[in-house]
Image (cartoon, rainbow, N blue to C red; front, side, top):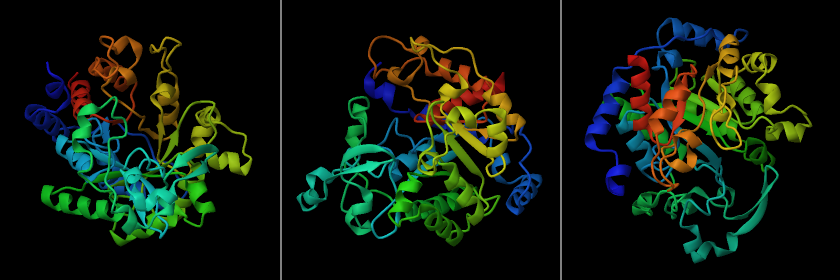
Length: 390
């Protein structure tokens, strides 16, 4: 099979993925954490059959859209993910100098835009420390929204996804307000809400610059009527304090993202809190998360660790423990390429070639996770349908 045939989702695949998404049945769900008016509102929404409990289980989340096929965080990537049938579409938010929120995985836009080709912005190249990491490049907080709109999006990992470079320069950086308007249009056209999964990136860092993300995000959600417990939007962050702040501002369901066991959320580092992710995924830590959030988004390695050879080991008790605390799990990230798959599911020696993605997904979904982030949502949707049919 040629690379083009292998990479591009065929019409039959698109229709098949969309069909299984539309026919998906509801899965078992755990109880909501109690204690706040927003939690009570969410519980009421669930009783009405609305809100996040109405989504199919496992839920397929288009990670940054469909970056397996289009440059990430572009309207083209979001649209394709929706057309493929993804249940939810993810956005990462960073602010501009004039306070707008735009969709980029990082505030460093060196590798995801053509900013280096703009001589008028050459003097903006600088070195910064972001969450303790030194980075040299161009950063969204040094640009106005109008200036960012003169740039074009590029494929982030062209060495792995060479076909995606075909679309370099086709789309601009979308503002989150543009994405909300797009979701409303698509929702009206399809007769159902378009679900979003929205992450605040580096919120402590930006708050230190006077660009607090949560308040800006809450204002936009209220303006577009997406601030309620049954609104079609998840809010997520790697910083628990950002989720706690959002819980005071809006009623949307909230997810705490979790990286490797030894990692410390950056807000913990700044506050002198010694806890690590390993502490947060204990039963006690999960019960605490459940006091202000409805879910967790762990790395897949927290669900099934890999050994030194990159093969999957024995599943942890995280799924069971999180469900016992009333939390749903949306782990990240499934990708089709060998470079990202567990060793036993790689096929051949080319790291950019597709491996046995269905085999890996079958193993992950069998753990009982409630959803999964995927760069290839059509693949994940078919795997989710396979799980339900068996």
